[in-house]
Image (cartoon, rainbow, N blue to C red; front, side, top):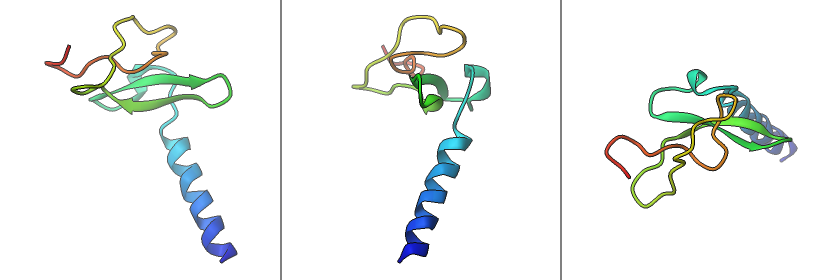
Length: 75
């Protein structure tokens, strides 16, 4: 049981570490860099889709703070 729990924690940490970013340039197409918090840092997240909040402000130091901008064709 402990091995399964440790494996799950390790897998989660790998996913979180792989999505960390410092600017939008580091994220794949269709995603942006969002600063989650001072402690967690920033992560690549998908662009906002229909019925999701879009960030219309320009990135600060290469990172968005509220959400990603809208995907193409969304407002």
